[in-house]
Length: 341
Ligand code: AN7
Picture 1 (spheres, rainbow, N blue to C red):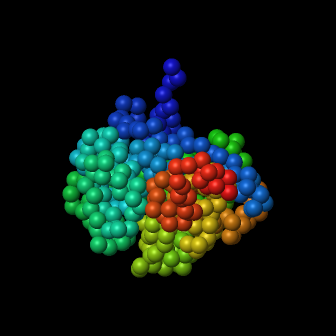
Picture 2: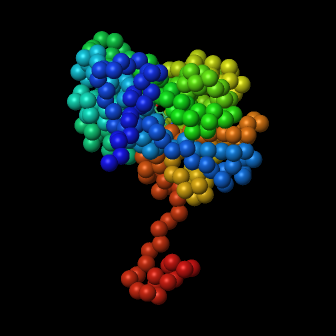
Picture 3: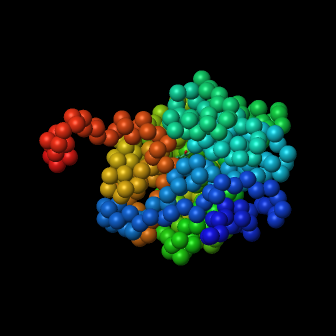
């Protein structure tokens, strides 16, 4: 029998704030595939790889941070974990809370999270609270809640989340032998770009950090919070990122940039990845590729696009933007016409 694939904390313990003997809550996260993208590379004129974070246990990169945040919560004796979320943090927090035997409560903007994420949070037994407000309001409220009650806040304002997520940069350095010029990454609450930059610095490699926001939710591009963010990429429908300064620092100190991509550009990249590379990610993730396609690689020869979440998270957006099914009567002639036409 093969030895089990260790989770992040075991794999990178030397770089993480966990001692041997500390409780570890893991679902085997991390060690995600890095897949070369030949057609995208042709279009961009550079070698491009996709870091497929949708293969994490709950289908998004959030699991990297959540194994650390929930393990630390157990160590601290917390009884419950809480978060505000556009969906993926909620799904991940709910799963790791279930695994740890902790109560989980997640606050999501009512009607604005993808179906798969809602199903996950509910199935894992979290209390799902639909806020009549947006993510930024939810985060503000949950921070106030955590300051007053013995619950562990597992949003990326929690340092352990950043610690866990920085391991994706370690993996990239290993997978590419350190040969990486630029990283394209969607930016919402700005925890992930902060974490990658931390990881790259610790690993001694400093690729250009190219962050992309949805045009209707692009506070970092505009230089001011957005009161009513809107985008088809519901995961990054965020108007006032918590890690604002750190994200800007990552982009400036690496010689990178932050840019906006329109919903149409996001949807084009989303369909292109699925239809031409065989990789189905969620709309927010496609912002990294949309950004690379519309803003270019800035002279980088070797580029990684981070695909933060799995396409199955948001089946409704897929169905709304994909081709139609072909109806068919149960006869050979009809099947021939339907299949071979
Ligand atoms: C697929 O789940 O903020 O810049 O509450 O789900 O670290 O916020 C999700 C964010 C990119 C942006 N791609 O990352 C949440 C949440 C996907 C995401 C982001 C998110 P950050």
